[in-house]
Structures are given as structure tokens and as C-alpha cells.
Image 1: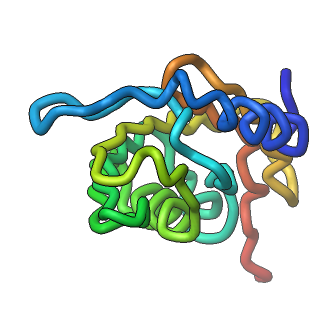
Image 2: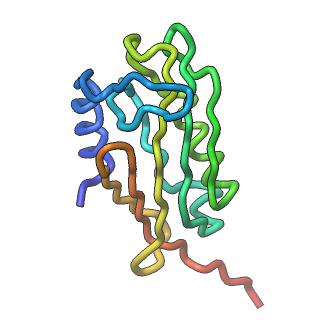
Length: 145
């Protein structure tokens, strides 16, 4: 499996491939990450991890004339996942050649393995536009008697 640092390197290299950036129409968002020039993959942390949120977060990003996010719509199975993804995409940058396009990027969140004090995220990318994030579940918090 790819670790987060390796995936970020691959995503950064892949983002340079302008051929993946498709011209979109109003009806169908462009797929793939070819328009992304810099993005921190929204891995498990904070509220999303402690809430043991699992499921999907599907993002639609409308870029303005300067290739900045004009709007970001995230449909997610848990509000904490929507927040995690929206924050990441808001801070992302996109290729100038993709200005005016609508992009679709999907995220799948899973918890697996032994509980841990840290998420220990593992991230995989599935072409053309899906990231799978798997982390260990958080340790249960026990109240003192």
C-alpha cells in the first residue's frame, strides 16, 4: 500500500500530466486529478477519526476563471468527512488550463485493523478520480471509576 507521503509525490507528479484534465460540460464533471497541482489528501484526523466516520465523500469543484475554487459541494455519508474534504479542497490549487471547469473527486473512508492511539493512514489512488483512505480505529476512551 502507498503511504501518504508516497501518494502525495505520485499525485504531484500525476497532476503535471495535463492530458488527464478533460474539458467539462455543465452536465458531467471532469474526472481525474489532472487539474490538481497541489492537494493535501484529506486523511483521517481530528473529529472525523474520533467519530469513527466511515463511508464516502464525493466532491464537485467548480473552478473560476483563474482556476480557483468558486464552489465546492461535498456529498458525504458523515458531516465530519464532508468538513475534512471541503477544507482540503479549499486549500488546493488547480492548473490554470482548467479554469472554468467542473471537477469531480471522490474519497472513500474505512477503519480497519487494531485500535490505535493514532490513525496511521494508508492512502490509495484509484484512477481516474478516487482516493481510498484507510486508518486504524481509535482506542476506546475509558472513564475512570
